[in-house]
Amino acid sequence: MKADHSLLEKFGNTPLVPIRNIGRDYPNVPIFAKAEWFNPSGSVKDRAASRIVMDAINSGRLKPGSVLLDSSSGNTGISYAMLGAMLDFRVRLVLPANVSPERKAILQAYGCEVVISDALEGSEGSRRLAKKLSAEDPSLVFVDQYENNYNVLAHYEGTGPEIWEQTEHKVTHFIAGAGTGGTITGVSKFLKEVNPDIRTYSVQPDDEMHGLEGLKHMETAHIPGIYDESSFDDILEVDTERAYEMVRRLGREEGYFVGFSSGAAMVAALDLAATLKEGVIVTIFCDTGAKYLSSHVWD
Image (cartoon, rainbow, N blue to C red; front, top):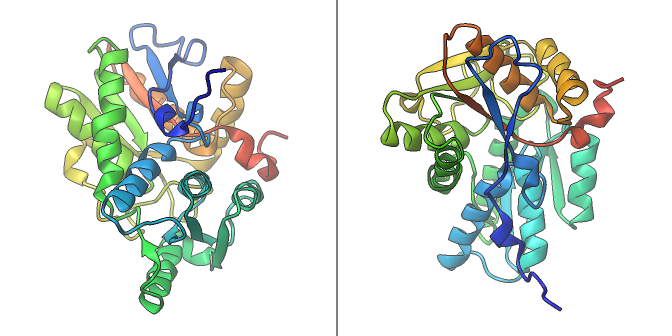
């Protein structure tokens, strides 16, 4: 028998899928999305989490039996938890109380220790609590995805080159949701190096009190250290209800069962396509809708 001994080799190289029906009003501006749910734990965050973890291991900070600490809105935490089970280290995560029940259940399945922070303080409240826990216990390996450059490198060295090759160098516009900022920063930097004419956009909620889990309204949020506003061209804001409606459409009209940030990215891509005479738009579908079913958006 031939056994595949490591899922680590399966991170990245996700399919680039077409938007066939929803974008039909713009035949000269085809839209494509990276189907990031093909990563082993089911989201784009496998890319950054694996690079962050391998750096911690290679530097000697993270050893078998060590405890990795970070804050997360869910997907990065799930990636850490999977890696911890695979590579024999423990994982302690700080999550906002309003993270979806599905994400909490998945973390429990991997044996992850979860610390709950105030929902009203959002992802920044989780990060502050993680920093406090790290200061109180120096044995914890605090990797801080919001400040860790390996988050950006994962996309600069992985996602960006994949998009460039999969579009046969024809991509003209790139769109990505902003949470930590790793994806939009890393991909933008790569694409603009290979072709400075490519336009790139950060997708954000249009209001501080939004319902797009995993995305940040940067105007009112703490700006992550790795989020480089000089790396992209503009910001595209999306209304929560339009994103919810889009996830329903993507499932029923395209066959893509995706999460809320993917719906927001698709709304932004359509809005952008409406302003263009021609071009090739690529965006990121971060995960599936399976982690959000309790929200009843699909009812």
